[in-house]
Image (cartoon, rainbow, N blue to C red):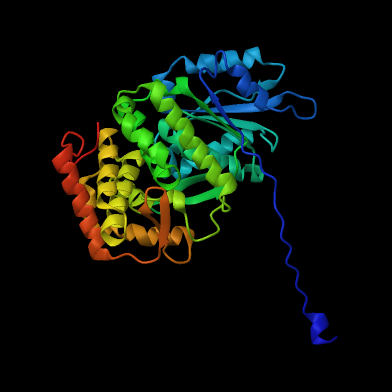
Length: 399
């Protein structure tokens, strides 16, 4: 046999036609409940098998939710059958920090004999969506996941994404998958039970995506900041919807839905945000950490690159007007904070790649960071916060 005959190679490219279904409703378990039922397909002529998981914080805030879900299942019994009782999962970052909770979720799936045509409907904030979504993605190599986000943060950003994860080794999202959910439903009524602090949090991601992709949206957020802070849904809801649309557009049309390339533009400000969360023992909300991260990188974009200083200040002012903190005591430990850059690089692999701004709506990537200017950026953000809004810029956390 010649060398040519003993060496053989095949490279075959292929694509998979995913469908990302996003729905917006005002009363999901009331007048709009057909939206959810219509998404559930029968299997072999039998009603869809469905299991519900609910964030404990959501269940506590809305004790009637259990009954609403039960009545929904009764009204649509020809289309679906609920498998087992309604499961309640620990809310907040706790569910992502305890690997044993992941095992518990998988055990419940197994006992219920869920299969690839079964649906897991998870109702909750981003952490619960992440953890339950990860379990769904690895059980039988993938069940059907319906996300129903209940926070502004998850409705405008993370709930729209195709990532699922838990934290491990004290690192944010170290264990996870890319998996397109069967559907996502953003319901306005589910935001009513949020605390003011959690309501504000989601708008840091709206600011972020607007700075990257839609200058007009950024202008609208700045103009409406005081109304958003007061929870005026007539302005807050359209902004959340536009934020969700921009995130969806990036995933479906950006050319890199599973982040195989080096750049992650939607993670603008996130290298420090993720690190600050772990540095504060996750007492700092993700949305608050993102606000701080966006503030730091906006100032750095001005000091080290060509973002006009007036734009950087306007970004800080917008975040503060929304009631978001732009500093926390932990960020002053810059030697520890800067470890977040290496963790960020490792999370993706390859070279360090951070997104910065030439101008509003003009993102670009950098491979190296001037450490001294980044320290100065942190100091300037802290100084701005302490001078401009001491009620928000506390050394602890926003209330």
